[in-house]
Picture 1 (cartoon, rainbow, N blue to C red):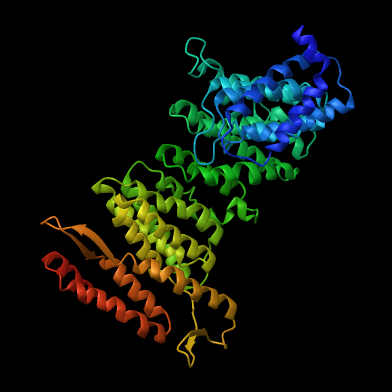
Picture 2: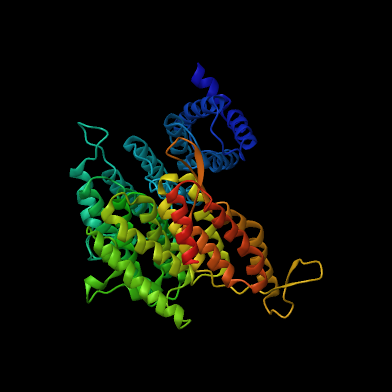
Length: 545
């Protein structure tokens, strides 16, 4: 009786759910218990749709709108329980086959992305949840469209790729997973289970290639897996995808779009992962893209980094060395890169774009600052810090000030990394290379030199230095410590004093004359301290200055 009553009022119920979801559409906060209950009820109502006949146009439009409102619940930034996610996916599985091919296929990319990583972190771990997502992809394939046949084949491959062990449901079923990975890792595009085979029967357009994006994101997700067999198999499969894309992009730009818009964005994010083993996989993927697409001028593909790739001599290859198990090899990679960038800076002809420096090289150089723990990693970390300074010397003000401010903010958050963070801040300050023209007017206020051709830009630089950066840096000149007798006292941070002095020297003389005496006074006041170590630091700082 209850089911018949719901069926009779199905259209009214759907309309009410639509209104409820629209009223909360802009709310991305944690889903309330009431909303979770509504999603559970909607899930049970949607199951009855499977027993219904063909929907009329009005109901189909309502279902399509419902899909659009439910899809954001699956995004990674939405805080939602796994049970509610299962309810949403069950609802989508019932609705997607009934809204038409075009409307259903428009959700494929969103479903594919949640099979992949969550930013720089691992994505959905639950194999049960991943299998439910694959069921939704299969529901899209139930619509009669040009991509349906290929999508059904992809769905079968996804089921094997995300299969759980029958005896241990939380573990992978390697007997099903590995054959799919091995097929995707086959460099022959004519192979039955290669990347090209899954989309060769689709139209040669961007929508046609979207059918393989769920497989691509599943492989990217496996790069985070602690099992070396899966991560190595996924790495090989993704390298083959890059190879096939480079071969096909000459006749079909959709392959280039796939690498640019989908793969490269995930690689750049993966470089920021805190796990050394996970990050290594993404670093090794990057030179594959650089080599295969070196003839393309797109900044997204980082073709300018080809000068760091040395296939003829692996010992000189930056990416091979920076992922090497031996720490001194990583240090040597930074040393060679720093020397190359220094030579480019001297000749004012940097071969690597600022975009590649900030998005690729800088994250790699910052990791040792936050991760090094042992004494043997000290030389490697200091070399990375020196490289950060050389990188900053090549950057425009917008990117430079962002990096400097982020480092200043991180100092208060990572007190255990103070030594390396202070060294990083000083390295960035030493790399200050901007011209700031100012003059004193009758009121002794600082103004821009009107003869400057970059008046607006120089004004912004000086305003940010004067009001934001210099006060923040000066706040780190002294450090509060506990003395031997238990009393609190302030100790001079010598590197900060020296870096601040160098910064003032790069500014006009009037600024130096006004700001430097304060730094000098702080150092001299430290000489009054009772602790001999504190006085020694102050004397050494004065000598260096």
